[in-house]
Amino acid sequence: MTSPTKIFNVDPIKLDRLAEVAVRIGLQLQPGQDLLITAPLPALPLVRRITEHAYKAGAGLVTTFYSDEEATLMRYRNAPDDSFDRSPSWLYDGMAQAFSANTARLAVAGDNPMLLANEDPDKVSRANKAQSRAYKPALEKIAGFDINWNIVSYPNPSWAKQMFPDDDVEVAVTKLADAIFAASRVDIDDPVSAWREHNATLNKRTLWLNEHAFSALHFKGPGTDLTVGLADEHEWHGGAATAKNGISCNPNIPTEEVFTTPHALRVDGHVSSTKPLSHQGSLIENIRVRFEGGKIVEAKATRGEEVFNKVLGTDEGSRRLGEVALVPHSSPISASGLLFYNTLFDENAASHIALGQCYSQCFVNGGKLSADEVAARGGNSSLIHIDWMIGSGEIDVDGIDRNGAAIPVMRKGEWV
Image (tube, rainbow, N blue to C red):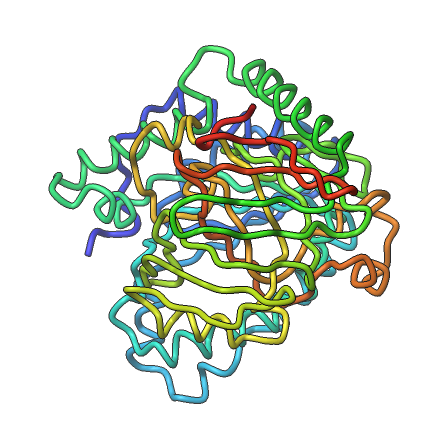
């Protein structure tokens, strides 16, 4: 295994641009605001740049928690069995407390997507469930958009080798870095301006969708005939959005999606995945599910079916949808032809749905709604939120208005 502390040759100018975009566009970090960062050890060069830009922007305190792939594997191979039903709740309680005090959140993604592929799937499932339960107080602050938060990525060598297995690790890291920089719009001289222009385009799409206030979306194409009822008083979002603390931020970099909340009880039909889902070390391929009354009643996959069914068994809300998102087939990530094995990227290559927890921000006046009010409007609650792709160049999408009329939204994967 490659040493996690080895520093690879990643373009320093583009890396610095990514850090600047994360702070200025992703977070819009405010003077005096604290920042909590989580990152894998190989992402140290990016974390240092982000920390520098954060303090230059006036950050109060920047605190980083690092993860280590080798230490994770040591647990699975040596820890006692009951370890996998536990998680450090004290840590996540502390994170929730920090978010309650208006600390911003930044996650650097880049872990090896197949790290746990050869580990005991029962232990992986139990550990994920324990972590989801412990993390829920902090997740609710993020899913509820209480604070400004952001995710960016770094080309971890183990991730790079997963994507480019036939290349030497140095070449693979360079290729993945170039792909991340391009998708994140930092391969140009003025990425901050480019992001502002991109946000304006996404805003136009959300305005159009919100003006129509569709009651449902109908997806139709090979292996798919799915009607996704939309939650009562739902609201579309995309690109920059304003958190409850009043700060406008871009949670995901990159992002090509506009998204909203489905009604947890009004999803019917069948749908097939158009890209593999990489989840906790397992690759789940060719997912096919059938919904009745909002709930998945039948689920199959040609690979990873057991893992997928364990996900569906997490809790009552894990068989229902918490998000539906529209992404053009011509998006830069789709056009790259790459499978990133990373949801942050792969979800921005195609329209998608997410199992589990909804975002309360995706309602009219969502920032003021209680959990009970979100549920009354059709919002789903769950310990998980897992996106998987259902869009392609063969999928049509219609919006269904209040009178039942179909209005074209996408044809062959493109906006009309």
